[in-house]
Length: 609
Ligand code: M6R
Image 1 (cartoon, rainbow, N blue to C red):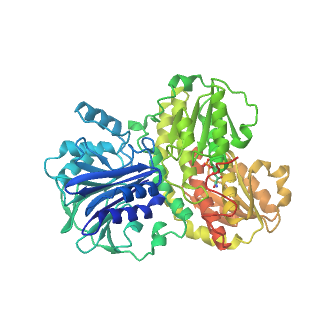
Image 2: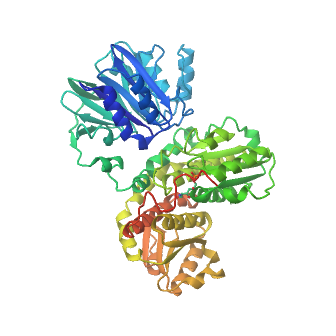
Image 3: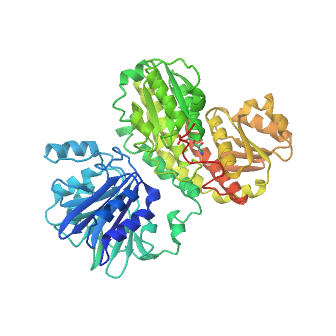
């Protein structure tokens, strides 16, 4: 997830674009750049690091002009350094482009372009588009962009300028957001409304597979078949602060709602044709390493650790591997038996968590290969791991991790499929079955999100509770831990996650008429056992809120409240089932008047021990 901004009109383009980028910094902040047509020539300024670095550079060496593009980056392909930052140019430097999204077939396009003589200056997927536009350019920029995007598979929102068409910006989009702001004799382009709200509240949202030419004199929009498309402008009524959160009241809620797209991103470009397997692009981890592995340690903290626990269930279910999971803060001080045939996997959103990094270094010292699941590209853990599976969830700003968790679970499913296939322990048919269901999950997550109003009503019944248990079994036991963590960290209501079968061994003594018991009881092998645990809690007076599979009438008789979710494979059910738990924690915290995005005593990234 990156931020793009573009401007054409009479204003100082550098000022408009830079201000817009600052408004979009929440979309990415590892490098930034602008390109303006200055005296008939394209000039580019770009810099790794925070946007303030670019602003300082532009203050020293300003660009002049009334048309330009800008970008604030959240790296996906290639390090967050200056060459990889946007704008990217073609070989001649006469075409410049900013891109948000992921081009899935970029490797194949890059090889073809190299053979045709194009020279690349970055490792990004985005630069491909600049060279494709160069290849197709024959005087009409819009036509060249149209042909270029027709070759690209994946997601893109782009803005392009060319010295030879110095009065126009061409924009296009597919599966990445792009909004056009309309002024008097001027147009603003951005990934998101906050970048342009200072200047106009009349906007149009470009649809997938549409392309537009913007000049001072007007705007024309086409589909990819070059048929004219008409849009009716909308009026934005949000304040700037509301707009930064996409109209949501907090970043956490926005991020909860970003999960369908975040999940699409984790799968993007990784599923082989015909659902026959996955490609994780971990060049540095040889298949032989995967074949000779005897044990995996999954090491991480907090929510990432619960995702790791979910990974253990997946790997043990589908492969013959022995898997151990530990908190990084414990693992680094234990004396685990590590060797060449032990793979250590770290899971981390930030890639900077101190204990996880120390665990990674310890594993490497002992000669273990390390594979990490990381959201922040270019983070220390990203750089120091032998193999990395990026989650591509985009920046997570709310302290409570939500979209990173479901993306981590998605990455762990992909890793399991990869290991199962390389080690010959998963039949092709089984791989296809899991992949088909995996691809159906974004749409199912969208469906689950529709329960928010019901969850909010249930939260109103329980928000004064003193304490809560979250119960689950098997694949959903780690989810019980995650649900409880979400509740305690943002609402300060005491909650504990338990494997349901453990209740009888002590915790059940706590249950009385005040006690809230949240049960993960969707259909699967452990369903009957979960029902027994619910009955035990109910018999002690516990107030039961159950997460159940759509159509399960049985649960309604046992639980005080049931939140129904769509059916999926049991092994994938945590990805669906956690969504109502996130929403439940959210609404309880809201009713308790908590500062949801910045809970007390917590930091987003724990970089000290
Ligand atoms: O950046 P990481 O994924 O390594 O962070 C790990 C934990 O600090 C993090 O998941 C934390 O538990 C969150 N606040 C949970 O919502």
